[in-house]
Length: 196
Image (tube, rainbow, N blue to C red; front, top):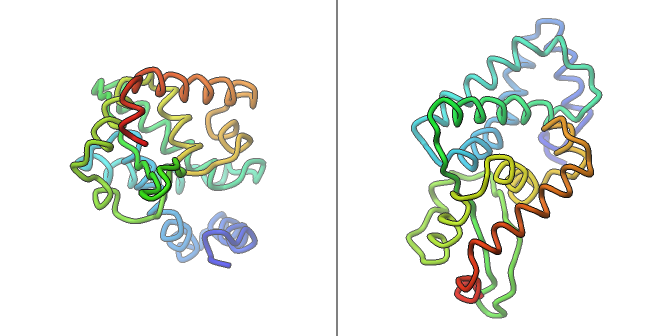
């Protein structure tokens, strides 16, 4: 089991970090840096701000760690910080861009999952028609729909984790995710056939 998924390791690092162990804080950052960068990029699709917002996420993590009470998974707590920073950025700059990675089995045409492979997101951004169609549709989704969609389909958070990340009820998560998927399908419309 990797450090990233080893909850006992994360708990131990958090406790050490609360005691002022800077090495533990550095390990926490190293373990989550890729996911935080990818989450921010997935919401904003703007490489020029990803590094700054990721750094701000970890600064706020550092400053607020003493408030973390282990009620929510650490990843959800950390993602909430990143999502709130992205929301602030969207409000300030009125940025309305998002991109995701969509995968279709070339042999069967079956729709696969939206994936996060913890690699440089730009490596997945191709000039394909499929990517253009998905990207254009996602740009038009309301902010809350895009964020819940990214957290579920790209970051693979459970409904419970999303609820804690966004401070929503689980029913709200499910209804907004359903709405986001429906809105995406409506926006794609006849173009859905081109994705098969």
